[in-house]
Image (cartoon, rainbow, N blue to C red; front, side, top):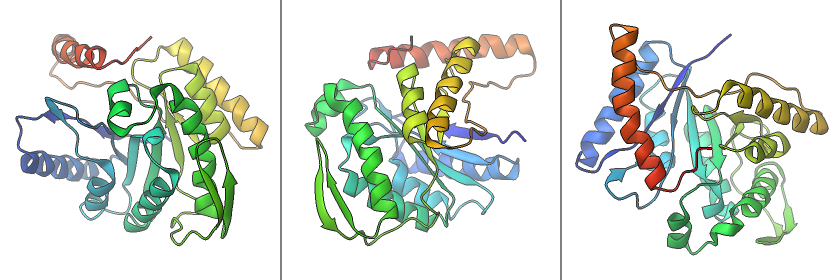
Length: 261
């Protein structure tokens, strides 16, 4: 069975934050009334003339605005910018507050300046992501954690917050690259395919996920597939309007450093 969700996005910073939040609540409630299963939101920092509301507090509030059938997704959080202890406790708390409706979506990030803001070397984002995913699972599932990694080290710590879902919220890895799909196969529960991914690339990446799952003894099930959709009175009108909207959106992505291909 196909389940449908929507991705909340940024808005121009000329829109007052309170209005942005009010609009998000309205969108989420309308989505629920129309049978949507997932509501997702991404993440950026110091984004200039566009604004993201941060996903952890926002989804905590949205959990009270929609019913138990709706799942809430961080798609994506820029995992390498976080210390895994902080991220583990934030996500575990959010899973509790959402009453087990959380999906944890994570990715590398692509804006080098965001890493500069946090003092994290951009070139280290992939190994930091991999190590964080290992440590997150340990902090969510083990009563006592000892870990000696390249970036983080813990000795005999006892996690005091565990997620409500067992063993932890589903982990969706978002990425534009084949390497990201392989990461999802190795560490995640699903690969969240970006909307720009072409059909032959989708097949290639799902096969990489399947292979990674197989090595872990994990079954390959339904995967989240993002597509851009525009509703209009006719196909012709939709194409014209989509071209207008998409041009600005993708120019923004390029200006902010996203290499789509």
